[in-house]
Length: 422
Image (cartoon, rainbow, N blue to C red; front, side, top):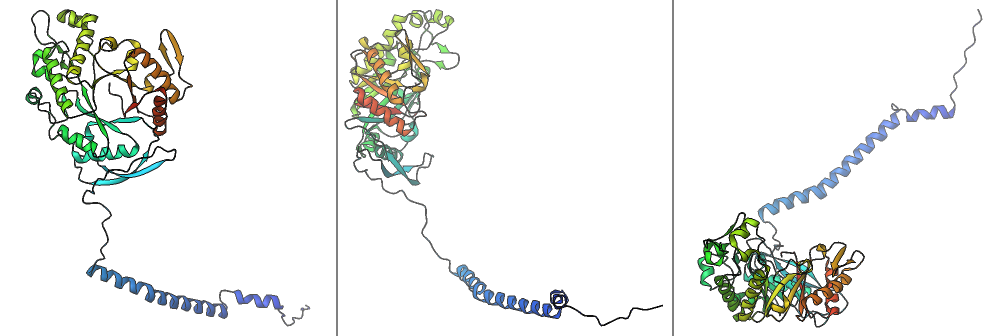
């Protein structure tokens, strides 16, 4: 057998040099060792330069902590009267003190308030809520906030439903327990508001009172047959505008408010309950006769106006339009002006007036304002109207347009209430 002669094995340059990249090549092992040593040296240097001082700092802080200023106010800062607000077209923002509405009003925070653009010569009036008058500090802070927004006067709810939110000297109210505990005096209320250059209106709700009649039965509705106190099945006794005791009570409250020097006394909730047929039979004509009901309501308003000439009865325009506001009898009311409340949400897309339907869906708030004020003015006859608009979902810019439209209509006083409560 012939065997092939084996020769010397020859490697090319390319194949031979590829072995350098083999995992087992001595040069690669040496290079890995060098890199590992370099990383260890670098970490050692960093640890010495960073971790060491950090450890020393932590130890030093434990022995002597660093003190910093407390970012929160622990005492109430002084409330200062805001500077006069400009009515220029530019937007003005003012920092004022606004107190918490929680029961403990000792802590104060700062917020930035946007000043509204209110036409010159217009008195913009904002109605407060009862939680904003529970203390002199809270009331002063609220007055500062609304003054910074551009309002020139406030409406203070002195009586809502059964409760008096001021220190009344009325013996009947004291005996019936109607005065809210720890409330302010009328002078404290007036002083807190005037401190910020604002005037003050009072508000007194009237015929939504039930506790007074429960305490004094002669102030409630009496059954015709036996003179017993009538009670609503759900709400209990109701105060009656027919009662001389009721008239004397509200006249006495009006005297107190007048002496305190308020700019006006707004009278709200001026309606008699709607009685069932059974109740009408028990109460007689006082419950069903429309003329007697109207005379009782206007008589009560006029009695208060005798004691406070700046009494202003308040009526809802929607009720005026549909005829359900029995007390709205301008010719029979001995008052100098009438407050008309307007809630744009009540009208939807249209409004009916004098047998015609008017489309409001495409009108701006300014256009709606002018249209509704025209209706209110016609209904009020020779009585000047003071419009009160419910803010509800309106933005500040929309409220500004409403106030401007009312001013253009000829109103010198425009009132704003955050929520409807007629």
